[in-house]
Amino acid sequence: MIAYLAKRLLLAAPTLLAVLTLVFVLVRIVPGDPAFVILGDQATPQALAELRGRLGLDQPLWRQYAAFMSDVLTGDFGRSLVTNRPVMTDVLAVLPYTIELTIASLIIGVVFGVPLGVWAARSRDGFADWVARIVSLAGLSFPAFVSGIMMLIAFAIHFRWFPVISKGVPLTDPVERLRSLALPALNLGLIMVAYLTRVTRSGMLKAMSEDYVRTARAKGMPTTIVIWRHGFRNVLIPIVTVIGLYLGVLIGNSVLTEIVFNRPGLGKLIIGALEKRDYTMLQGLMVIYAFIIVVVNLLTDLAYGLVDPRVKTT
Amino acid sequence: MSAALSVEGLTTSLRIDGVWRDAVRDVSFELARGETLALVGESGCGKSLTAMTVMGLLPAGVGRLSAGRIVIDGVETSGLAEAQLEKVRGDAIGMIFQEPMTSLNPVLTVGFQIAESLIQHRGLSRRQARERARELMELVRIPAAAQRLDSYPHQFSGGMRQRVMIALAIACEPKVLIADEPTTALDVTVQAQVLDLLGSLQRDKGLGVLLITHNLGVVATNAQRVMVMYGGDVVESGEVGAFFANPRHPYSRALLAAMPRVDRPTADLSPIPGQVPTLADMPEGCRFQSRCPLREEACARRPPLTPLRDDPRHLTRCVVTAREAS
Image 1: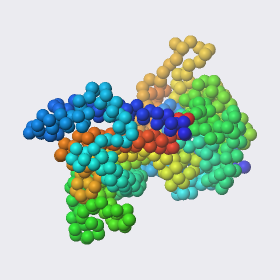
Image 2: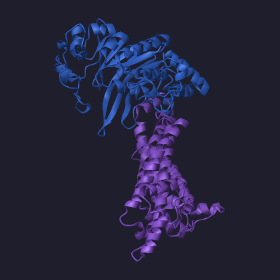
Image 3: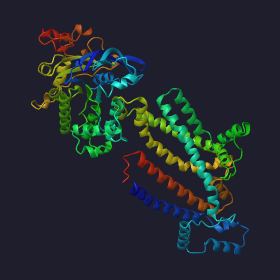
Image 4: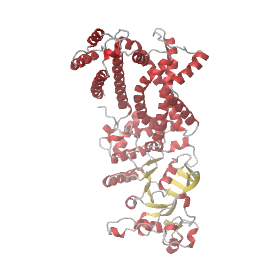
């Protein structure tokens, strides 16, 4: 298992390197002079030259690349062009909010989506199947800003169970922090519930018609064991695939949820940086996102090794 | 001693396009301990369906036992609820399937898959069941059994997987083993080994084997009695020797004539003309009549399974050949 992990890590390194290079090239092939774009057409030549010097844009390309790489590898993404704070400081300040939102919506997705999918497959075209279809259709077709606003109207304004605005709550107040997490997590989790319900349902239908399920029944195993030990165990493989695929999407899609609930997070940081043309911040965020996706893929590969014995872990 | 398996008037219906039709009609047989009864016929003749009905494994809503009695080792299982059936399946009766490549669960170790029914039916602890699984793997001649307990099915060849299937099916020492085309998917040399293994287990354990096959060569060398099915009907049954020496039903004769033999040129192969009618347009009376060279008016009524005068253990469902025997 450790050798498998090391191999996966080793494979992740070139991926990260490629992404970093791509980010470097992207920022430099943007039409026009970044200093000009940043300062606008009213800038004096002195100011432009001064900014180019500060960004290192007057250096030869290979030296810029070397400087960029060594900075990134030491965790230095430079300073925000807007706030002049180090990019890393701003990112680290909101990262916990994004991570807790993602994990909470993943948990909601697994806790509701997987049993609903199994239940739906058991009563094909029955009541549970219809419930599952409606839930997954709703989760996939409601845009996050619509479902988010509906939740706010119902649970925050009408019932007043949860706060309307979930601004950053310090960890010293865990109850309030969870309350402010609940609605955004539910909103984002609905998408995960939809995907997981679908993949679990179709996976179970397929697994239950496999020859090995017939073998288990021929052995006289009780229905519950046949469903969970023989059927469901095999559905874990597509479930892990979907979680791995959509976890990255989820992190990217948290933007709308963060805006609707006015919640700090990477998504809001990106929107802000785009609006204000904060190039260093964008560059840093791209790298962070790439890093998160690589880590998620690594965890997915690891999970495969656990649920599928046919994946060689040695 | 009572029969290992006794089936009386078994009729299985399938729902096709919302209509229930009899896919297996009025099948009766007894299987003694230590005996091998071969069930022969072409695809779709109802032989596997008969086996699934005996196992109580018909898919709900699609297939049902509409008439008949099934008694396994003295216990009537027809009409039992699923929870009671589960206690019989895998305990008094075991089954092995045609596809060793897909019949084992890919995410569970073979040791556990063998041990599972012992834990379920015999109440063995995990450790005891594991020890017994090792013995069973040795019994079915899997080399290095102790080391292979924790292997997964994908680490085994087709022949070895079929041995695992056999070990799994006989784990609780059933009285009846249904083998549904157990060697069809295997190489010829491996086929012989697996059949040989089944034969020796049968002698040692007094197992009654219902061997489903379309390979008449396998029937000749492995079974004592044979039942031929066509279109859901048993059309002929008898001792293997008598059957091969003097097949009575026109379908059995056609089947034997369509089989390649080493001692005859292949040009002599004669295929059976026509096709098996679908369930929806199965003729009244004899189901083989549309393809039968001996057809006459009496075939429009369903012929009874008639014993031959000179050999009452040899039966044929044909008015013409039953007459010719007398």
